[in-house]
Image (cartoon, rainbow, N blue to C red; front, side):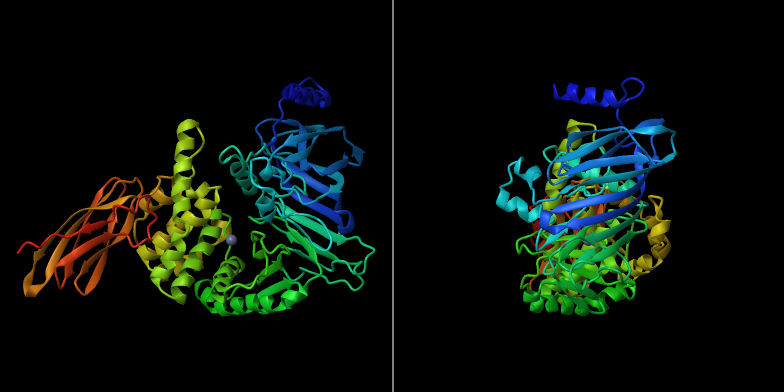
Length: 573
Ligand SMILES: [Zn+2]
């Protein structure tokens, strides 16, 4: 009966009969919000305007506005006149409470496709710690709150936007954590269509308590990130995203000290000053390395301390929210490489934006220690990629869900981990200089066609990369699975040996993969291109008879690493 009840409510606000509700009809093109935060009451009160553009094929008489279930709609107006709306709970995991307060608004006029409407809105309520969406699928509460740590409170508030807390209005179909990729797909679609939105949010603190929090942070560009107030009453911050890009509007409010250095700005609690200094030192240490790739970063990395030492770190743009634990300086450097990459380079495509930042962490690990150390570091994600590929393949067999190609990927394992490997493979294939040259010519605003990046690579390398982009970027062809089919050694002139190795790829994605021949006292390697479901042959000269042949040093993500070693037999004389 729940469904019928919902339909009745929807029909009741329609002026002419019943209609089907299209939650994806409108793109929110502009937000102008005044947000007042009352930490003592865990409250938030918002007034402002949102502009909605009808991007559906049909005219729309109604609009949907969704906010977190702890918040209540107070007013929705257009042209100074109150609009009729019905507020109903809507179950969706895009919010930590697992539910939204959804307003279904009767618009003052029908909005044609391409047309826009500006709504004056008001809502308020509480944002307490709440991990319902996780606990109801069986995650223990003690674990869940380390991941869903958002709340307004005293002495600390931290609230992330869409995907965590709908503290500004959105509209989309429900995403469900218990249904495969559903949540990530709806959030991915929302973020993609909101990239050009202009967001202007004025945050201010309302408190009588002069001991209260005094610093407001939001992942914002420019210098206006925090305003420590004198008496604790006039703290405010302008958070402007023009355009929003891939960032998620997020705010943090606490009694922070600020460590402001040339590469990074760290907001920390006084008792963690030493750890904050370590973060700052790590940022300074990696700045030259990041600059080699992208030039001097135009902005700084932002770090804000999360009070829960077990909280999962979170990033939006160049803002990193993380506990400031006493972490190994080498690990901190790797973390700061990621944030400084974001500060220096951006792309509207998640696999480029995030994948590149993760790739550069691997490259920095190589710079710190060795190629093997870097491959071990990246290898920590290999199993997750293999599992994600399996899950995606089985989901696609069951339903008609769309392909999880890298270029439109919405799940982390793809646009972060798999993408990092794709960048690593491109570097191995074309050399670091080509990669740097491509990144220097890359213009985010020109990346509007799928083939843009491929064209840049081809222009720099003079190589045809269609097969590579087809197998790894435009389509999801799974992962390669290499095996050494055969290896024959014969004695060549001057006591050298020539080993002919045939590599078979059982997977559908091709790659250029290193083949290593081991012999007594050493090893030598060579790269061979092996397309999907095909074979490649490579001839490698060695000074002694081969003992073992190994395909793939770990630089190509592979579904099965168990069949990569071949024990050589005695050479033919
Ligand atoms: Zn990132």
